[in-house]
Amino acid sequence: MTDQGSSPLESAALLLILVLPVAPALGLYQHLGDLLAAESIARHGLRAAVLSHEKGQVPASLQEVLDPLAQGWGKTVAGFSLRCLGNCEDPGILSLTVFVGSATATQSAGLEPK
Amino acid sequence: MKSEAGTIAVLVATYLSIILVAIFGSIAVVAALVGANRVQGVAEMAVLFAHDRAVELGVPDSAELSVELEQFLSLAPSAQALQLVAVDSYVTGAVSTVRICARYVNPLGAGIDSAIICRESRAQSFLIDK
Image (tube, rainbow over all chains, first blue to last red):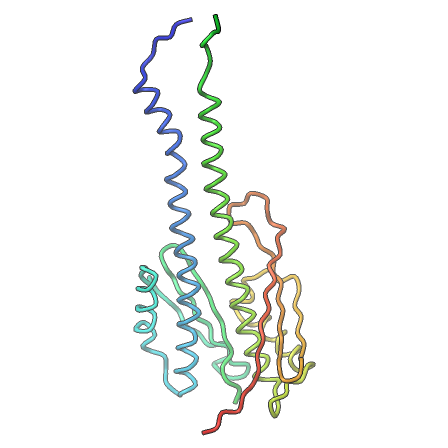
């Protein structure tokens, strides 16, 4: 049996094998970070939308509410959709879906009963 | 003389498995936290919705609370996204309580899909003097 071989080559191969799983893991962590941020942004954004709706205002400027929330997480809101079930009449459920990176979060809340 | 012949493959495999277990373990924990956060969010919104509609003179009606809770859970998109396994509601004095249990599905698909996450939320009405 021979002891001949290349130590640098073996080290490089060893490091490659050990570092290889880190790349997809970082992607997964990024996705989970996006998920956590999206959930939080959707919840707080929905509260703002419900409050402005109850004041009789159309929550048209929701983007202005969502942007500072996203900045707190170091993220950017890629988009959002706000919809009201049953034309905002009884049972009056407001639903906000927020898109952050590859993550989507939906939060729903009831409006104040009339 | 002792032989030095051997392989470092076992060592590399051990390191690799430790790294993979650490990565997948931490991801599963964070994913479970996201799931718990989601269930808590639905429980909070559900109790507010049901309590608002079941309360009269500051005291919620237990039967009405249950009906309104069912309505919220069947209509709200956030609740429909959950795999609900148990829903409970009760009234203690002026406080409405909602307890929701949902099935946690591991996003990694590692076969760990039997965990149940339960979260509870309460609501009470207050009279605010103007």
